[in-house]
Length: 154
Image (cartoon, rainbow, N blue to C red; front, top):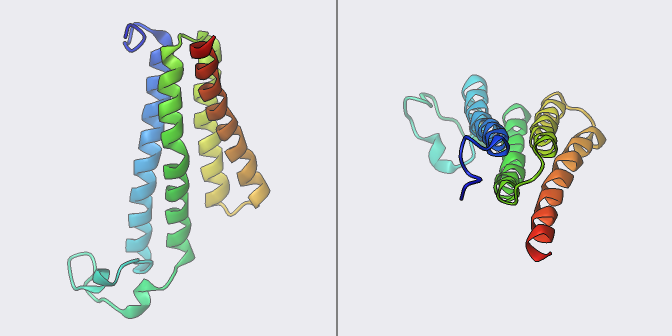
């Protein structure tokens, strides 16, 4: 358990990257709420059409898909599909005592790839551009998981 403390620069790099990714997940959720509030639409459940502080004038059309809101919701879902794997693989990677520079490249590379993916998605870039950034992040996570297995087996 010596690897998991702030005296280990690899763990520090992981903690920074992981914290940024947790903030990305949570921030995207809040962005979706902001967009729902701003557009007064994009609600998802019938019970959302009750009068309340958030929805003073409920209308059935508020349940219709609104791309402005739904794009943020899809970005949030994409984060939830990808970032947890990084959090787990990255922590396991720290445990096998990797080279500091290589760990920083992988951790911060994942963060940059996810942020560029979000920018590409948020600005309606092509699927190919989004897929490029997704692929970079995915390969990083796969590499870390395989690296851990190789170190543990051999």
